[in-house]
Length: 241
Image (cartoon, rainbow, N blue to C red):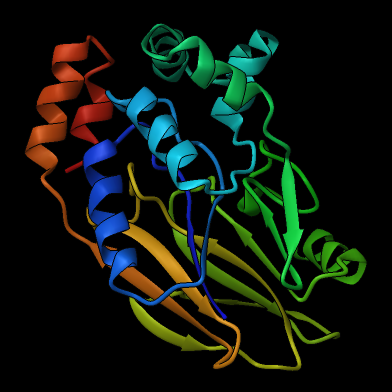
């Protein structure tokens, strides 16, 4: 089975379109979203409508959580908070209903899918958890693989039953060790923060036991203009470069 997994599209529909074009040529059997399809970007409603039309399973991200429960708005910095308030006005009632029904994790194919950190947090960043804490999570996790987003960066952490190994997750194919469990941070479609401005997503091949990291270019200038025209905070446009 070949499974395409993406995260943190953040209303960047142009980047999402290019990722979907790449997925369409990649012989995948299914697609899963790790959340944060809204916030920062200018076209959150188009994102949600397309995801619904394609019937893509989605887990709840921290931006979806704050849209569902405004008590979480205090968790965000001022610009992100302003962006979320603006985003609510850009979403249809149907899209808001869809977002409010999202669950914090999906478990399937001997994998766990969560936005922030397992077992089910949309808020915790992987770097906030000590290696001892990560080891405890690995030992309690029933699934062999867990895919996460949230940091907008690429990273893979392996556990062999004895210790934790942090490794880079580069563009292209990475072979997994059948004897290890992994937490795999898959980067961001719509707001990369890893010094490379391409949209990122991954394909997990269960038969080959590989992770294929895809870098997908898109028209950043077009998105910058849309962010500026929508009245969203300018830093969300500047960060795309």
